[in-house]
Image 1 (tube, rainbow, N blue to C red):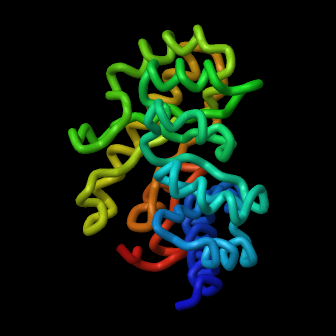
Image 2 (tube, helix red, strand yellow):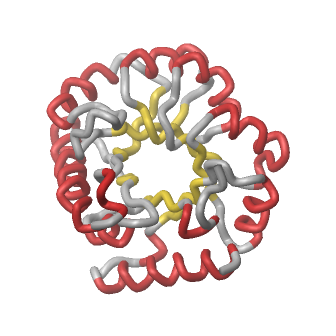
Amino acid sequence: MSIKENIARVMERVRKTAEQTGRDPDEITIVAVAKMVPPEKIEEAILYGIKIIGENRVQEAKAKFGVLGDRVTWHMVGHLQTNKVKDAIKIFSMIQSLDSLRLASEIEKRIEPAIDCLVEVNTSKEQSKYGISPHEAFDFFESLKQFKKINVVGLMTIGPGWAIQDPEASRPCFRLLCDIRDELAQEFDRPLPILSMGMTSDFEVAIEEGANVIRVGRAIFGPREY
């Protein structure tokens, strides 16, 4: 299928799932994850309605940004190393993977005036994944108060690795993130409107559990060419 057809299919899946759960499809934002996708394919996706591109690596994003610039909005969705922050803040309008005070400190030092961030929570508790652990969430948010230019607007998580074969495996992870968000919002008396969760294999489950940002790569761009 073409990228145009893929995007239409993803949008239809989003619409159907949202309506089945009594939600407005327009409140679901699709981030097209473009890891290893060349600029010409991203241009095609933009043409057919994609407004936000997610990238996993700063160096790769930097090359594509040089071609596409601000024709599209860029989100950092992969692990961000502190030594890449200087370049990252020139490209991304949101960091979806804030996972340490060290990273927050480096962003704070370099950004002006401020940047939207999501705190990544490792709800699957897999050692191979980044993100703070669920039980660290309250202390982490408390510590983030010291940073005036880190605007935390929500949370992000990734389902377990085996969700590719069994999307339902992600449901407890997504439900946990939603619960953590609600508790944090109440404890710190602040809105945390964004829940970024769900990818190609499990975004319908994520929408059912409250996601309003989904990160979709393969379903839009096809299998990655390594």
